[in-house]
Amino acid sequence: SGTTQTYRGIPKANLGFADPNDAFEHGLKAHGSDYDLHKNLDGNPNSGFIPTSKYGYIAQENAAKYYTDGYVFEIDTRAVNGADVEKTFEPLYKSGQLNKAQWETIQRDGELSIIDSVDPQDIKGFQKINFQGKPDGDFVPNPNYILSDVDDIADLINKHFKKLKNSEAIGKDAFERAVKTPQDEFYMAIGADKLFKNFDVDDLAVKGKMSP
Image (tube, rainbow, N blue to C red; front, side, top):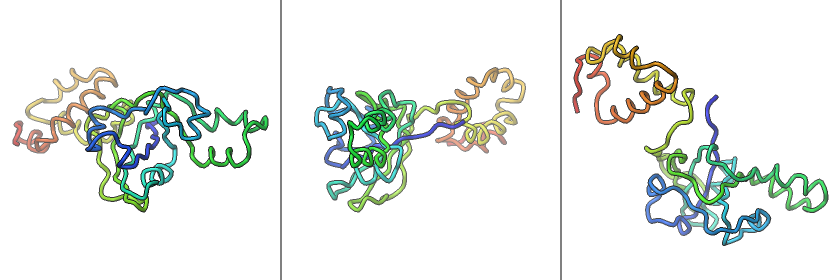
């Protein structure tokens, strides 16, 4: 079971830093410290929640809401420590404390709220959005994003491990001794991916050496 994601759309003017890549180092922060979820629905400027959406297109609309460029950050749902707004407010709607228009807006937005901040390692990356709410350029992955479990790194394992095991530099016996648990696979795959960004994996496996 892989992770899922939620989306945070931010107009460029509200980004809080000059370069969206800074989020990979510093994370995303809420604007304030008011944890009244009712006020948050009305756009509370002092909200202690970071609103995200289960739906990417809603985040794209939010990123371009001032008819300027913006960004959509893709966030691992493990960062969601607040509320699924629809589930939270459904009892209020059923009891008549929310009107139909309010409820339809809540359903449309698909908000997952995050309290205070999103850590850098929980951000998968970002997509620039143009003033029309459309993707502009390529998705930018976060090099500091930490995958959640072994299922998530199957591609990395398949990409690197066979070559590592057959490498003259490492050898099968040493490799098998190093990998004891699924968690070992997790760390080895992450480490291999970081290491081989600057080296040719085939060169290591075939020649037993690294070539920049």
